[in-house]
Length: 116
Image (cartoon, rainbow, N blue to C red; front, side):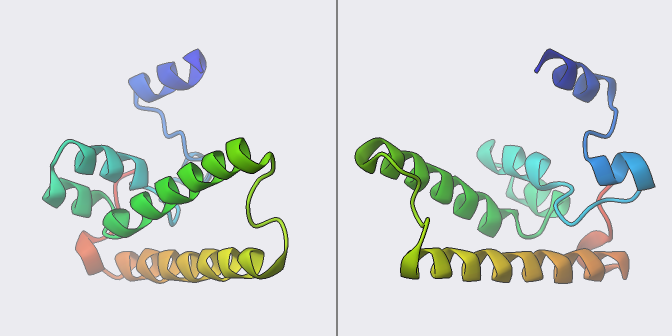
């Protein structure tokens, strides 16, 4: 944890794809966008990643739901059945949306690619 914080403080790219290729990955900017949104900076958050207002609450909600279910039932949710299919479908849809926005940003949409 301390090494990670030191890397962030030094300005090193912490995204493996960005570190290897020098190009942003589909999720690059989401952490910075989420932090900006949590501080009430909507425009800045959208500049970092246009899907942050959608993705951040979804991920937070999935994590919170998973923890609550684990505490209540003793197992992680969606490990089988219809719930697993719905979660997988939502994950695939979100992944496709991230990929579409990622490619669109390379063509100048949404302010272009975020700085690595």
